[in-house]
Image 1 (cartoon, one colour):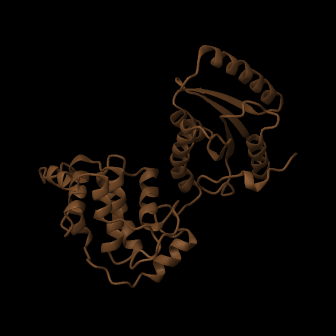
Image 2 (cartoon, rainbow, N blue to C red; image 1 turned 90 degrees about the vertical axis):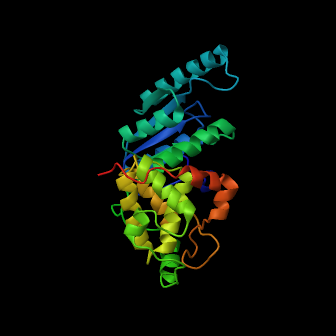
Image 3 (cartoon, rainbow, N blue to C red; image 1 turned 180 degrees about the horizontal axis):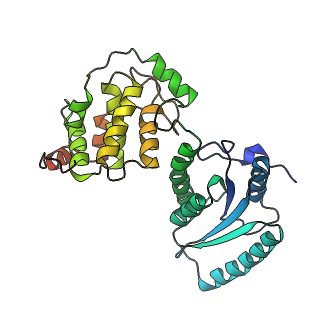
Length: 299
């Protein structure tokens, strides 16, 4: 079997060698079995893992500029692909519907440990690929990391930089009860916390800011992670979900991120402040609109 040049491989998320599980090849651009580098890569990965290989093609309900003639040509080619794969003992799945939803669901059903796809420069397909990578990163992170609810298995650079700055002076210090009540010096953070408590949701950009400020205002990264996770699980409608664990680990521990400019407390963890928020949206209007009833219906 031909070997795939490592320079052809771009890792979008997770570790393809971590753990086991089915290997899923998402056929997108190359509608063929022969001379298909991504399929060769997926096959090699499956053989290394001694795992099953499955191939999926996502049939989007609408694709820019596609005509009935184009779909007819594509279906005839996919029929040949299915027959060729069947002769090789490889399962083929035709997935009608939104590619992000259908492929993510198939990966979960097959308990896929790795997903491989072919390169495609088209903007719409790149967007699908990035969305799927983001969707799959959370459950894969948890499946291969039994300490997903702690910061024990951070990237080495993140653990090192947080430890180096563990003794840095915090500009403010708050206890969990003060944070839970939204009683800090920061009106924007308080508004985000109140929105979560009252409505059970918070915009994703604010969630990042919210979690990073807990890191800045508590005694350690581990304490910050514990508090952020507890508040998220208690008040968010999507709490106790893999995305919540990974989102907080990203904000506080640099999971699925890279090292940034070093600064106090954060070290090389990505920093956020209210000035960045003001460039994104009308912060003052958000704060004014957050003056909801303070009584929570949570119990």
